[in-house]
Amino acid sequence: MTGTIFDIKRFTVHDGPGVRVTAFLKGCPLACKWCHNPEGVDPAVGVASKTVRVGSTTFTSNESVGYEITPDALMCEFRKEKIFMDESGGGVTFSGGEPLMQTAFLVETLALCKKEKIHTAVDTSGFAAWDDVEAVRNFTDLFLYDLKIMDDALHKNYTGVSNRLILENLVCLLKTGARVRIRIPMIPGVTFTGENMEQTLAFLTELPFPVEGVDLLPYHNTATHKYKRLRIANPFEEMKSLSKNDLSATKQRFEAAGLNIINN
Ligand code: SF4
Image 1 (cartoon, helix red, strand yellow):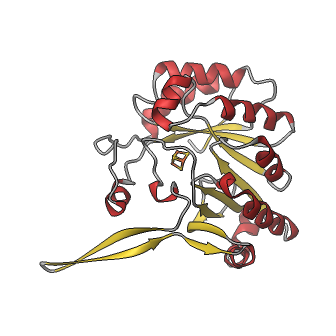
Image 2 (cartoon, helix red, strand yellow; image 1 turned 90 degrees about the horizontal axis):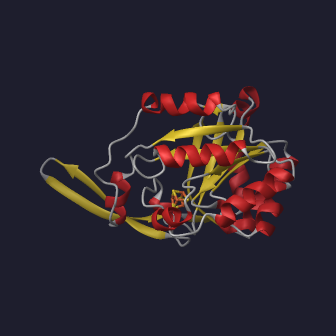
């Protein structure tokens, strides 16, 4: 068995507790217009151009985006940072793309992590068959669960899919007793609007089972160079990055409603 990944980031501190290693799995059923990992959307190994300038000469070459890896080989990568994970209360995080698009590979690797007592987190859009979510749940210590837009028509417009399955899966997941942190990408004029924030707040505070916390993720336009390398259009090329200060009023609003804000 192999899975397809496009990156492994070491010493990450925003993908769950402590110091972590984050593996990015390829493939995503969504097509968010602000996607910060466009190289992770296509499930297949792809090609991107790489340009290097030396003086007045420009050299361009192609390089692979993504590669196949076995669960055992991925475990070898995780073990390299085991001491930092153990000492910081960290672990590993599976992100993407959408990791639930490779459920069999994900479950096998998560089971190996559990065997070695490594804390596991899965960062998901929630857009997956419930059977897949449930299979992964048994080996996952913490879910980082994305919520984007509450209005379904707008959700379809900006991500390409309905939010119904995402919202239903979240309720089912919480019902199982899973630990869940919500992540909201704060995209000005899209997710980060007064109306969407109020609708999100109402949804979260009316859930029958509580979430552990909410992470407000300020938009960063750091993916601009990725779109160029992949030679695909970036609909949000002109959008400016946000700072944490831009989110302080929303943070206070969420906290006043009783929600625990993480990382901000
Ligand atoms: S869910 Fe994440 S990886 Fe998938 S398209 Fe949206 S931003 Fe990109």
